[in-house]
Length: 380
Image (cartoon, rainbow, N blue to C red; front, top):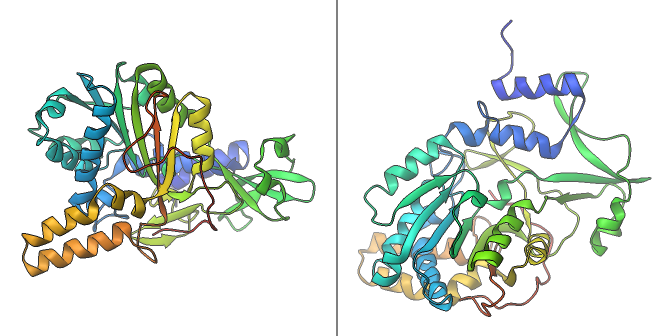
C-alpha cells in the first residue's frame, strides 16, 4: 500500500505508532539527518533558490575577514606548520573559498594550512568540491570533527550548532515534562507532553529557568559536540570561532522553528521538507566548552565583532573600486551583516571564541564570561 505521506513523514508516523510519542529532539534529528529522507541528506538548501541564506552567501567580506582572523590566530599559536583549518557544516564551500582567497596574501600561512571539512550532506559535499576545485591546500572531508588527525587547529563554525537536535521541556504543575511529537485523533502531528515529569530536572536548570511559570518551555542541547571541539583545542592547541544566532543567557523560551523558501513554516507540517532549527544558548555552549578545558573569549554580537576585525574598512575598499550598482550591493551586505532589525544579522547572531588555555586573547573578542541577553528572537 502506497503511503499518503511523504517518505520522512511516513517514517516518523510509523515510529510513533510503534513506540509512542517521540521527543522533539528525536523528531528534529529524523527530519534533518535520516539517511534516506532527511532534509540535510537530500538537497542543497541554501541561497535564493533554497530555503535560507547564510552570511558567507551574503558577501565575500564575511569569509575574507575570517581568513585574516585565522591568520592572526595562527601567529598567536606560534606559527605551527602544518595547521589544520577545520570548518564545521561548510555549506556550499563559499566561506572556505573566501577564507583561502584572503590568506593567499600571507604565503607562510597559506602554505602551512591543510583544509578539513566536516559535512554529512552528500549533495553539499559535491558542491563544496566544485567550489574548492583547484585550491592549493590539501582538502579532506569527514563526518565528525573528532576523527580528524591530531595537531594544532583553527576551527570555524558558522550556523552549525543551531541545526543540532534540541530537547524541549515544559513546566507543568508537578515539574518539567519532555515535549514530544504525537499523532492527534484526526491524524495530524501535534506537540504534546510526556505524562511523567523528569526526575530531579530542577537541579540541572539555570536559576532564571527554575523560576519560570507554568507553561514555560526550556530548550537544551547535549554538550558532546562543543566538548569535542574544546577537547581538541585543549589537547592539540589552537582556537575556534563559533558564529550562530541565539542568546547569551540561558532562559526559558520556545525558538524551535521551520524555514522553507525563506519564510517561516509549521515545523510539524512537512517533515523532511523544511529546515528545522532552534536558537543557540551561548551560555550553555560556553560552559560545556569550559568544562572540557577550553578558554572562553566572548560571546559578542556579530555586528560588533565584524566591525572590530575591519569589515567597514573592507567594505570601503570594495566600494572605492566598484561601479554604483556593486557599491550599493556592498553597502546593503554590510548593513545586513552588522545591522539590527528584521532580516539583519548584526545583533541576533553571536560570536564565541574558544582556545587552548595558553592563548590569552583572540582578535575581536574579549575573554569575558557570557553576558546578559534579551528575549530570544526568531530569524528567517
